[in-house]
Every structure is written in C-alpha cells, then in structure tokens.
Length: 552
Image (cartoon, rainbow, N blue to C red; front, top):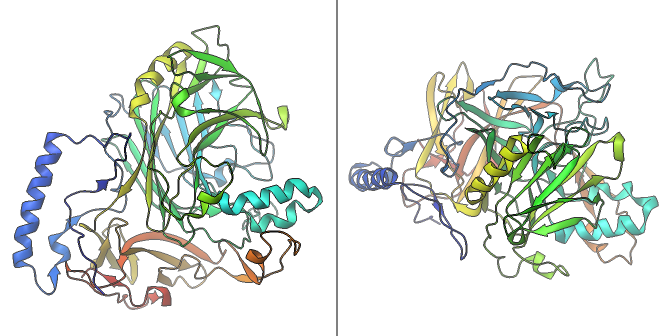
C-alpha cells in the first residue's frame, strides 16, 4: 500500500468555523511559492521511486511551531542548561536540582524549566509564584504544564473513588491522567537511594534560539500513576518565548501517536503560590474584571466559559493598588473544531463538546500547600495522528501593567488543529558507533521531521549498563508489565473493561530515553524515495521498527 499527497511547502492548519487561520506574511508566501517551484523541478530529476532526502527541506523535529505574531523581546533574554539555584524557598527536604532542565532570565522575570518541560519556578516582582511543593509529588502538580485525560475512561473511576473512599488508592492504576511533568513515584532516588526522586517526562530534544529568545522542547508525557493499565503515547512540544514587556509566550503542540484518544486537555494546568499572590482576578467579556474566590475540589469548581471572559485572569497582592505586583495568564477566547463522529466522549453525560473553560480555586489543603489552582480546560478529542496547537501567555509586572498587556495579547492566544506534511527531513548521523541528531560524524540517513499522516515516531533509547542504543517505534519496549487484578466489583459498569488486564511500568530505570529521531514511514510513499530502516553496526533495531521505512 502506498501513501499519497504528502507534498506541501509548509505545515497546514485546519481553521474551523469561528477560528481564524494563522497569519502568513507575503515573504512566507513567496518562499512557499519558490519552494513549490523547486519541488516540482526536483520531481523531474530525483532518482529511484521519487524525491531523495537531499531534495527535501532540512529541518529539525522542533521546527513544528506555528508562527508567532509577536516580535521577540528587544532586551537580551538568556538561557542556560547549567544548574544554578533559583533562590526560592521550597518545602524542606526537596532538591530543585533534581527537576532542573534550564533557566531563562529576562528583564522582568526568571523562569525555571523542569525536565518534563514544565515551569517549576517563576520569579518576578512578586517573588516566587510557584507553590512550595508537596514531598509526595515535587514539581509534578503545582507547576505550569499540559495535562491530558480521557473523560470516557477517567470519570467512571473518579466516581467510584468518591463513592468508595476506603478503596481510593486501589484504583490508581486505572486512572487515565497524562502529565507533562511526570509521575507520582519514587524514581531511582538520590543520595544512594535514600531519598525519593520522581520520574519526570523525558526530554527528547531541546534547543535555545538566541535570535528569537525561544527555548524549544519535545517531551514524552507520562501517565501520572505507575504502574498503570494504560500507556501514554503522547508527545508534547513546548516553546517558551520572551516577547518583552514582562510577557512570556508559551506555545504547545499535543501529538497523539497511540490508539487511545484523549478528550479533555488542560493547557495550561497550573496556579500560583497564594502567599505571594493572594487575590484572584478573572476578566469579563465587557472588558471589566472582578475579584473572585473559590475552593478547589475533585469534582465541583468555580468556572467561567471562555466566551464569557475577557480572555485572561490574574493574581495580585492587592487588587485595589495598581502598583501591586501581579501575574496574569492569557488564554484567549477562541473556539476549537468540534468532535469527530462516533467518538467515545460523545456518550459522556452532560459533556459539551468543544467547550472551553477557565477554572480556579484555593487548594483544600490551605496554608500547608499554599496553592491557588488555575486550569484552562478544553473538551476536544485528539485521536491517533492528531495534533492540537495551543498558545497562552504569562505576564509579570504591576497590576496596571499586566491588565493592559493581557488585554492586548488576548487575540494572539490560539487553539487549533494542526496538520503536517512529509516535506522535510530530519537528518541523523553516526559517530564512533553512536547515533545522534546533532550533526556529528557521518550522515546515516533521515526521517520525516514532522508527524505527517502515514508516519510514526521513532525513538532512540540507550541501555545504561551496556551503553547500547536501540532504535524503536515502541517507547514502552523496555518497560516491564505484569498481570493486574481487577479491583472493581463485578456489578460495576466498567468491570469488564479492566478484566484480564496488565499494568505497565511507565518507564524503566535501566534505560535512557535519548532522542526523537523523527517520523518513519509505515509504507512506501508515492513521489518519495524511502528504504527499510537499517541501523549502523552496534545499534539495535527493535521489532517495532522493523518494516518501517526511512529516507536515504
């Protein structure tokens, strides 16, 4: 079987009714036309069954983000991957070095990025805005991140927990909640294994662009509980961009490469340290704003439909003082394409497909947790092969400044389905017998740079003990699984779903998840020269990747 219709000069976007398409400048349109002319010419001169890899655009897997309407900051933001303490006070016993991946410093804020791509520290005129953390899940919940779940799977289990408090933890392995940050577990540990260390979602690629003041990442998201009967086959791409004036632009793409659709997307999930920013502000559609209160609970929370809001919320020391330190979240008011037909989520009672909500409330643990929760939730299905782009903003300054800047950024916030073409190649090299994507050594071959139709992600993992690398299309290839006894009573509506299941460890301590090599072709492709994947000597090819095709 052959795939058709892959060739396009750029990524394409689905702009559903009520949602503006991305803006493309005249320069980009000219470049696209030129690329189309080059592509048509190369079709006549390429060898074999179609275009060679050398005829395609050379790109990174991180070149996926929709174009920003905002120029980078005029002042020089800096990024470092070398750990330095943030200067913030955390719960005693926690070591922020364990979560650290990078920091970005700008004129009005300092950002700490965790290994999962989450924001674990955000300092500004208000001090530290991220809560002090719980020892049981440090920098896992009380951070800014993307969370995805399936209401069709999660709601029955949540209801069972509420009705059976004594059995609350027994059904943890049944819950479907995928975190950008990582897992609620004691990982490999540190200090000789005497202290707990959570497992953070592996960062498969990272890049700092000093010209655009942007940090770009792609992470393999994790089921929040391990072991779990469900796998996580979700990638999240995240770009953090300094656009000046105290504003930070965050663009995320959620890509589903698994069989299970997700239908409830929190982007962002997060909140603030209440002792730093005690008052919550929510905007209104008429341009005004109001101070609000609420208590965060498992089921019922204060919420506002995005069309009824002004597209932003904020937290401030004193709402009566325009000079009071403040932090704003801008989520916009755009709609998103409606659900696909025959989707499982369509059968969920009271679900309004495509609805977008802002939810807030103070954590029930009060001063001990010091957490004001915030969530922008969107009810939309992301199925196998789907990608969803979301852009939001965080703005630091005084209360007057953040209100004004937030209002200006509302129209720049976006949510849209996004599709990609296999028109670009991510080259892969080999040096001293080790595969890399950094250009070291001799070129081995290439993969599609983008998650196009008919392609699947290919990962590079390394055995910690032997150092042997494996190319695999199954990210769970080395994760152990065991039979799981069904904890639900036979009369429960979901009992049959969990009968004769296995639970999966969400990772293994013996493996390093090194890289996203790109996207392999499942079949031969019209107009494009591909070949079966052949790995360099000393590198293993997992069974899941055998039969897939790469670019020469």
